[in-house]
Image (cartoon, rainbow, N blue to C red; front, side):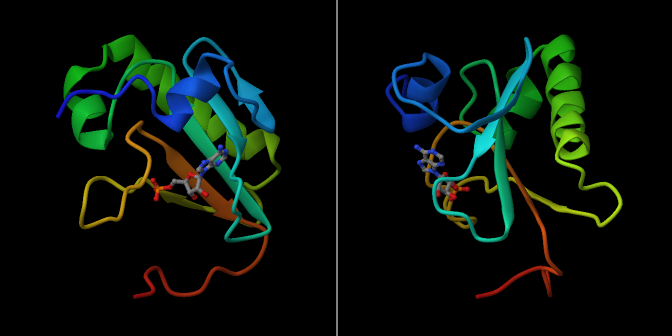
Length: 119
Ligand code: AMP
């Protein structure tokens, strides 16, 4: 599957549609989810054309992999989530119900989140 440069997160990265920005550096952009599932629900996306974790983990440079993962941690830190804790989710592919084909990590927090999966 080829990367779709018109997906919604690609448009956010290009500045074609707005987002509620939380954090940005050379490697990543973090913004609040438009349909939050918890009091804190922030998405972190890499700056690059990667469909999913499967794609990113194989094809991204060492620098981008490192920079992106540091940015995920930094976003959570800046949101003040380290003390209370938070959950990371990266839905990948059909079984995980990935809707947007640009890698994104969900940061969820702000209340006890309960069991890991709901069906
Ligand atoms: P996933 O199912 O893991 O692909 O999650 C996609 C997420 O993107 C969902 O939680 C959506 O609410 C969120 N989303 C879709 N469009 C936007 C947008 N324009 N701005 C912020 N979040 C969005």
